[in-house]
Length: 165
Image 1 (cartoon, rainbow, N blue to C red):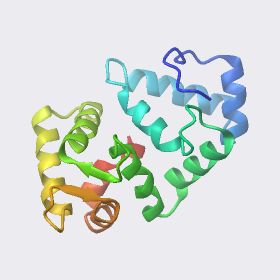
Image 2 (cartoon, one colour; image 1 turned 90 degrees about the horizontal axis):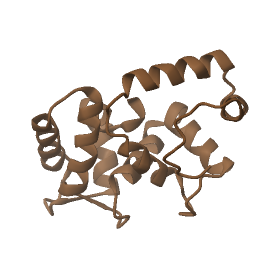
Image 3 (cartoon, rainbow, N blue to C red; image 1 turned 120 degrees about the vertical axis):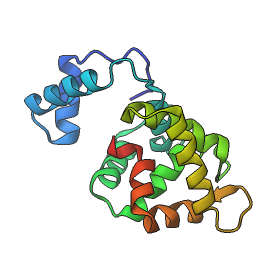
């Protein structure tokens, strides 16, 4: 399961794999695919690269079944704390275990485009995130600052979560 850019076509083989791994029917998968294509037409798909990076725990460039299943379960039915662990990984673009304003702005800009919001909204969310969650005022967010902030501020936590898109 590599991060391939030409994987937008839903083939019978892909449907079969998705049915086996998700437990969903062919009709459900086709419906989700059609909705995804309709909703995401002309949207910056770079968020998928960041989500892929978060799921690829061993940094192999592929997502094996174990990584997929763990990520799928945690991001769909897992406890909020664990879900926000994955969200932190999406925002930590340079993998230094900190989120700076530039990283937050990049992800929030993509999410705002997906939600139909403006760049001004992305800037406002970024500023609010950094002011609200940065408890020690060092201009970066640690894992615990980010996760605790998401848990404490459910509205901002929901907006920051790319798995709710």
